[in-house]
Image (cartoon, rainbow over all chains, first blue to last red; front, side):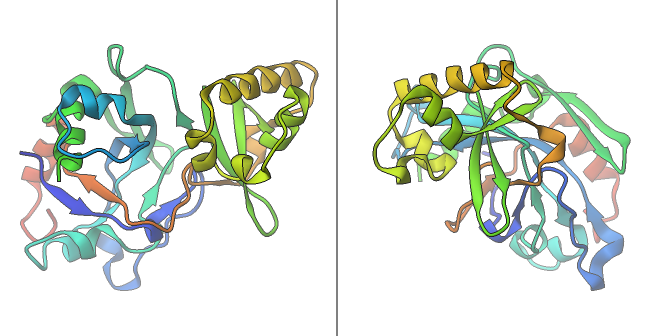
Length: 136
Length: 111
């Protein structure tokens, strides 16, 4: 079962916009390149096929975290949701790239490649994650 | 097909991406002859909930405008999040094996 946590709308910024480091926690701010699945319509108790049909598109997403804040409580919201901690884009992709074989994922921090993986290597396949989010 | 949201002086505007170029949705709509309630073109969210064939026509018009030199470089535009929203967002803790191994190597205070 994937762990589900809250990341609020105040985190969202566009590609290239600066991430503001929380003054008291700047030493423990961390990146995590991910593929965001954008759900385009409301579904309930969806099976995998229904979850797939509800997907509007995909976008690159940096799940920025303040690791020390994240672990101060049993749930992660405080460490995941400071302003600007959700850079995404540059675009919402509407085609079937992820449905049809997956995507290569690279993350760079200040130009340095720090993460290189493929969506096939995800611990929980995105279909299962989408389903578990939308079934509730 | 790719959609973006651009920051203007006092507003966010949706745009269509063609390669590494962007075309404002209103220009594409004019080119495609799409009329009607302007709210249907005001945001990426509105575009997604509109008619699918309109989206196809907009994309074709954006490609034509780009070929005619009537587009801007993606790198020259200030971008907002593709789907700006006031709504609550949630995320699932799915990650890659390499990132999980990296987390495991961190001290518990920093994980």
